[in-house]
Amino acid sequence: MTTIAAKSNHDVSDCLASLVAVRSAVMNEHADELLARFHRHERRALAEIISRIEAGTSPTAPSPRTGPFQVVGITGSGGAGKSTLIAASIAHLRRVGRTVAVLACDPQSPLTGGALLGDRVRVRFEADDEGVYFRSLSTRGAQGGISTSIGPAIHWLDAFGFDVVLIETVGVGQDQVAVRDVVDTLVLLVTPNTGDEVQWEKAGLLEVADLVVVNKSDLPGADSVRRQLNTALSLGGTKPVPVMAVVATTGEGVAELWKVIDERS
Image 1: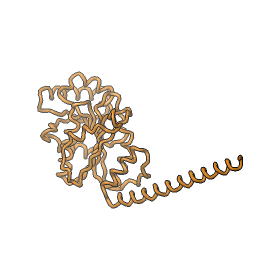
Image 2: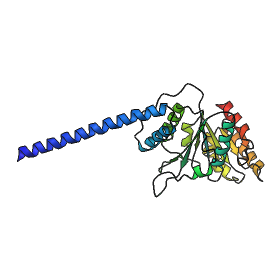
Image 3: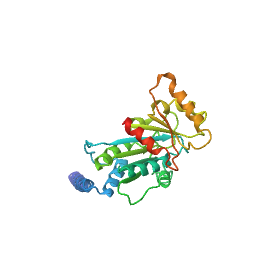
Image 4: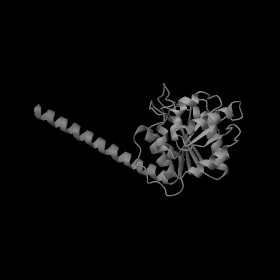
């Protein structure tokens, strides 16, 4: 009986090992096919790779390109108009012939565990434009206002050939500055309603932003907020940070904003 049981266990082990080997071979074959499709610039392959990044099963990222490539973060509190500025930026970048990808970080859905997709609804662009790619990523409870998948996703978007990647954070507070580590330029968006919030913003986001933009600058109080920001940024010997004004809903000031972003890249 002992011999039979040992043989049975051995057979089970061999069977499991064979299954693992077959599964590994199938996965490797699929990964090779996926990479081939990616290098043919198939957008579905790009989408699948980013899904694999979120699942922790993505292939090794390719080497970065040598051409021009920008990663720009758009951050700020909820209601500041981040999605509207993203849409206006897409329109501007496409007008000047640049391709753009957007990674929008959304809160985690309590039902599915995925992104709530609120940003995708608010950002308007031509759906059939091959020069634009949009992907919502769930933060999955991560701290800092961004998804942990952002870094690897940026590498793949670079390899795919996009000129610019825009990162939109969730509505963030003063200590949620993780986006600083993954972007070349960080834009902090505020509104004329910011008021006294400038003081708590200064404790975190203002200290790491490269540009501060007052959105809805056609509303009362915009000039006052700009003065507060310039005063706050002039204190404490911090680096020079431009304070600009836009009206994202109309696109006013967006071209000027991108001129400054390009000059600082």
